[in-house]
Image (tube, rainbow, N blue to C red):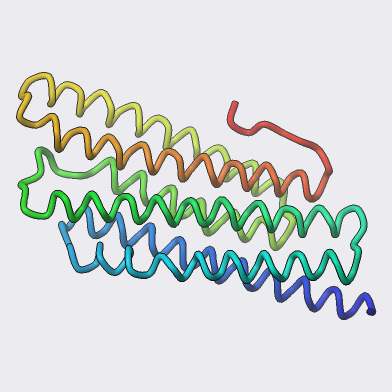
Length: 218
């Protein structure tokens, strides 16, 4: 098979990754929107749509294995395909966190929130933008952009710490708020994990371009 054919297949792989990341980003944004607005129907939609990224993961995985088996790519091309396999795993886990958040929205549907949600939606916005941007960095093999994206993980971590402190004080002052406060802590932790998954992707992007293993979580 020709190099032109391989490049075409690689482009199709990248397009599939862009589509999957778009679906995952939308799920995450909808999950946060549903939580903030106590929109049970939107939360249910996120949960019911979870099979879409799952299906995409299998399809992309299949494309990657076929490219490896039929083309026997060398060096950088092989690293790029291997990175795609890692990316879809992280994207699928991010989609799972969107479902986790949506389930909490349903649990809290009939309760008055113990506080206005400000920092959690902010975390969600940052994490969602990281998902979108990291796939752009992968397609363009842009290691500087990958490094910049990973720095946003610090913003998410700082918000998580702030939310933890605030909710802890609320729960200490009123034990009746412990259950709901704990659920919000779970949401914050899920979003913190989303940012970690994106940072993992950024590390793989750098590896695919340079063959160097960097730890961006430091």
